[in-house]
Structure formats: C-alpha cells, structure tokens
Length: 277
Image 1 (cartoon, rainbow, N blue to C red):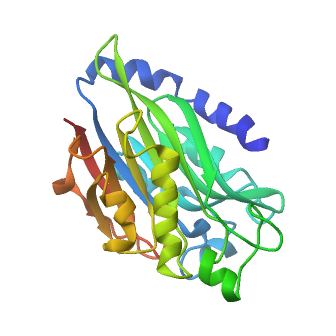
Image 2: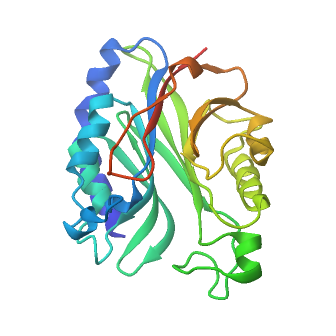
C-alpha cells in the first residue's frame, strides 16, 4: 500500500522530535486541531484548478502550533491529486501520520488523517454501517431509502495512540480519534455513527484517555447522546467538534476556538488546549 510506504518515510523525518519534547514536557497537555479541508479544492474550486496545493493549509495549521491534527475530507494518491497528499503534508508539518480510509477512489483513497508531533504506537479504524448495492467500502452515492437509512456515502472513524512525554524518562499514551459523520439521511444515521464510535473506541470505559474530533455534521443536541452520555464536550463550531473521554478526565473547554480560513474550505479549523487532570 503506497500510503504505508510514504507514511513511514514521512514519520522518519520527525524522529528527533520525541527526544527534544521529552526534555521540556512535564504533564499531558495537548493542543488539538480539527479541520475539514474539502480535499484542498477551495470553496471557489481554485485549488482544484491549481493542482491541489497544500502550502496555504500547512501555513495556517503551523501558525496555531498544534500537537495533534485531524483532517476530514482528505483525498490522497488519486489520479487528480497526482501525489500522496498525506505524505506531502506530514513531511511539511514534520508530524507522524495515520490515514483512515473511508473508501478507495481510483488510484488512491478518500477519508481522514491524524497527524501527531509525538510517536504513534498503535492505530485502528472502522467503516460505519453502510448499505449500497456495490457493498460497503466503495466510491458510490446512495439515493432513495438507502440514503435515508445509511447516508450518502461511506464514512469512517479511526484512532492513533500517541505516546506523549511526561518527563525525560516517562510518557503516557493518549488516544486520538478522528471521525466524519454523514451529512444526509435521517438523524438516526448520525446517532448510529456516534454509537458505533463509542463501541469501536470503547469510550464508555476507554483503554486510554481519549480525545475525539471531527466533522460530525450536526451541532449540539440529542443526536450525539451516545457521545455526551460518556464524555465531555470540549466545544464545537458549526458541525466541527472536540470531545474528551472519560467524563471528568480532561479540562480545556474554555480554550476552544475557531480560526477563519477564508476560501480554503467551507469549514474553519477548530482547536483547543486540553489538559489531563
């Protein structure tokens, strides 16, 4: 798989980061950022016309100095992209990458990305329940009753377990999860995707302290009860969310903010500095 080869290469560029960070880190405090980047098309499609350059996106994110980043609507290695965008952006940001595939798209993939300043020690991903005559995990669009019951296209959730330094000789594993819920279909589609996220990630009794981020295609409300029942809502702007698990383990809701991205995407990046109590 091309992504794996380039992910290893991109990750190798930041091998020195862990040693450097360990000397100064004393507690688990992370600045996290999530952004739906619209496949680098830009809202006026000028990004697509220019070959999907990523430099403006990288500059905006780097200016926020996050420790962990989640990207939604991330297309990589497809014929129109021309290159492995995950490897490119991970190298430019000097971060460890993990790709969460929603479906293959011609020569590449469409899905979500997690990037971390700190080493990633384990990963996992899951396709949400979806039904289409081609089967799940394909590039396709639903209509009719299948759209109502399952949403438009295949969506996914995934995680990267990150080793965060706490001293010169110790660290703590934190789970970073990234999800993209569907924007169409009955509200039960998003509730089911929230419920499947809780089950897959074990959020009712997490193995590690967990931060979950993503474009969940809904604001606040009962649609996301599966998440609010077991975790704390750090904040959201429009439909982009940051959650923390288990309940009471993290602080940082007062630091939640969004950043105007102009025409780079139809979503602004949102971020927060979260501290493990």
